[in-house]
Amino acid sequence: MARRRAGRPRKNRVRGLKGPGDEHARRCYGPTAEQRAKRQALVGTGAAEHLAEYPLGVLFARGLIDSDQLDAGCRYARLFRLALGGESLAAVNLTGKVFDPPGEQDEAWLAARSRDYHTARCLLSRQGRRVRELVENVTVYQRLPAWVYRCRPPSAGDIKALDRLTSGLSDLALHFRGAYRRAA
Image (cartoon, rainbow, N blue to C red):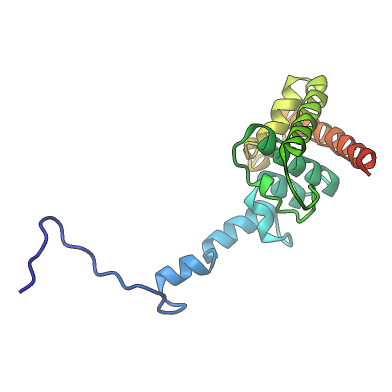
């Protein structure tokens, strides 16, 4: 007779998937219907569901920023990750754009990306601390502004915050567009 171990007995876990009706299979195959409904409510009807995964995508889906500003925000988050470390969903490059050329990424390459980040941060700082912090909160730290999902009409402060965010992202887009031309 097999000897039992002391303590709480193990659960009988079935390894592998039983099919689409299995709860484990539902978790592995994607979001539930409730999650899809919440994502759709966040980005609005007719927008791609994957844009609800990060704040810049939500702002883009709602038409508050354009594609150049979206790309600039994602690039800024990527440069932050390369220069200072830390993970960011925007740094994963969900937009599909190629920010960095393929090939060897050595110390000189990383130093150049660090300089790019610090130049972009100085550009934002020239507009003011509030603009820089708002852009960093949305792009780097993935914090969706509270005024995006409030159920009341936007206040004057909300509109001012949106103007600051779009002006900061527009300046980043112009800066990175000029950086692309200089590199080419």
